Image 1: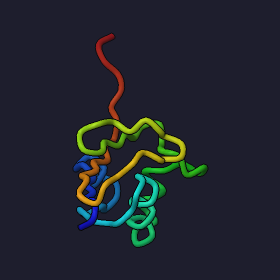
Image 2: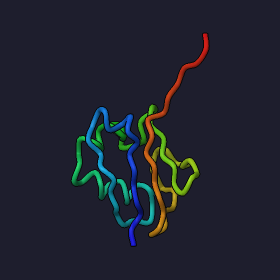
Image 3: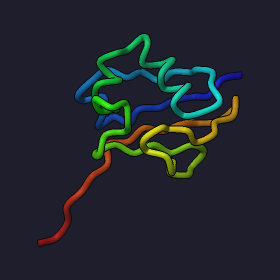
Image 4: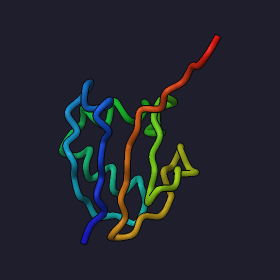
Length: 92
């Protein structure tokens, strides 16, 4: 089995990111396998230093990742990864 990766609809309005599966022991390994086939998605999710962009967030099995730079959070072969576009703002 491989980790399942879902990109939320608000991301898909900007770049096509279909549901995917990929092997890997860390968030970085899984995402890099997906981005190898979809470099446009990589540029939307990761910055020029390959860190998670400020406006993005990733959850593995319901928990927000801790390592936004190296993406070294562990992933199991049956993990579910959700990539979200984080929202900011609020009442003024």
